[in-house]
Each structure stands twice: as structure tokens, then as C-alpha cells.
Amino acid sequence: MDARAGNAAETAAAGELSRAPRRILAIFNPASGRNRRTRFDEVVAALRARGCAVNVVITERAGHAEAIARGIGDDIDVIAAAGGDGTVNEIVNGLTGKSVALGLIPLGTANVLADEIALPRGVDQLAQILAEGPVRDINLGRCNGRRFVMMAGAGFDANVVDTVSLRLKRAVGPLAYVWQAAVEGFKQRPLACDLLIDGVPYKTASVVACNGRRYGGPFIAAPDAALVDRCFHVVLMTGSRWFDTARYGVALVLGRIGKLSDVKIIPAQEIVVNGIEGRPVQADGDIIARLPATISVDPEPLRLIFPK
Image 1 (cartoon, rainbow, N blue to C red):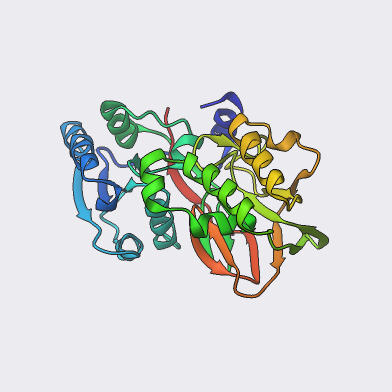
Image 2: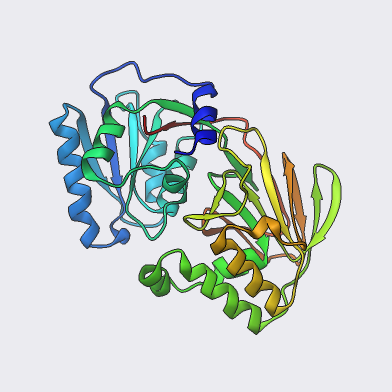
């Protein structure tokens, strides 16, 4: 973890889990890929070798992870999300009103939260963190009533998420979004969004409310954002021509999108997004709502297990 994120995590309001060994419910999404089941089983075995009581549930459909998380009782200390961003998002929504900690076993096409906290990928390292890692409170967002972890966006950003190929995501991972951005840029002119950011009006081609630094995987979109801050860093991309979107994609990969003259990054707690009614809104890499949308800081934090 970088120094800033580490210092912020240490000062966040949270505490350790009092019970040892931990009681863990591991939720595995088989859509993460058949070859990843072996890795998941290895992490579970390593947890049990450390004395943790581990129950495993395999999801059967979209929304199943959320339903499982919503139905847990007091006999669980940690839910381990074994999958990608979508699995994490479902579980986070299922944990509304609960004090159970979230742990990560990153297996999907992308797991931006795992990248954000610099989570190691080794089997033994993951097991040690889930079994012993410190628990910190992190900020969450809410969009039209649904919680999200890393980001929510509308305009050109959401159009890309809405049209990106699942096959391409599995083949090249986060770079699929960069490619799809270029394709969308050639296909059509992005539709403008009218915004109110903490009550101040803006107009932009694309808006992303970032809860952390990263977007789409390892790419840095909002370098000053932090999971423990009670605000978003709102990225506004105002260019609407195809070569603007190409510039944004290249700048995102290089970690320099905030340096572009037609990009603004604004700290805020509430964003009201208007545009053509029914256009998509994405959060954590999935379409979760349609315009108009209100994005705000969720009043309830999430307990997350960090690396030591």
C-alpha cells in the first residue's frame, strides 16, 4: 500500500475483530473462471490450516451473492468475496446494516478494490490477511439507492461499460475498457450530462465519481482520492470528439488523466446527474441505474480487512 493510503487507513475509525480464529463465509463466483476454482480452493485450505472455520457458498445467478450476504447471522465474522468487482459490489449491498467485515479473494477480470489497497495475490499471503489482517472502516457511495465501492459514472464512461464485450474483458482484462472507449469514440458523439456538484452546475461529456484513486483496475484516475475520506473526487471529461476519448484512454493508462486541460477533478459529497432519461449509469464496472441519478456519500461505512 502507498504511504498515503496506509496512513489514512491507520487513522480510520475501526477496530480489530475480537474473535480468533475468525469465522469466515467464502462466497465464490464460478463466473470468475474454471481455472480460478483451484486457486480459491487453495486459499480456503490455507485458511483452515490457520484454524479458521470456513464455510463455502457458490453463487448460482446474478444477485445471489447479495442475497447470501443479506441473510447471514451472528455466527460469521468475515465474508470473503471470491470474484471480481461485481461480486464485491453485490456483497457490499447485502451487508447494509451489518457489522460483518469484508475480505477479498480477487479472482475476476478486475478487482479494483484489491488493487486500491495493494492486496497481495499469493495464496498464503491472502490467507494470512483474511485470518489476521486489521479491519478498517472505509467510505462507500450510493447511487439511486444502491451502494458502490470504487466509482460511479455517467455519460461516455457508462456507455463504454454498457457496451464492452465480456469476452474481451476475459481476454485482456482492464484494457478492454480502454479499447471500448476508442470504439465508442468512433461510433457516436457522446451525449452531454448536466450536473449539480454540491449545488454548483456543470456540463460534461462524462463524469466519474471516484471513491478511491483507481479506475478499471490498476489505472489511476483520481490521485488524491482515498477510501477513508468522506467525499468523492469527481472526474469531469468535457471533450466529446473521437480523438478526445482516445486522449483520455491513453492518459488513463499513463496515470496522467488529471493533467489534461479539458479534465477537472473536484472534491464533492453529492452529484446530481441529468441527461437523456434512461441513459446508463455504471458503478464498480456494472450498469446499476438509469438517468437521472443522484450520487452521494453513504452514511454507513464498510468494515474492510486490509493487508498489515
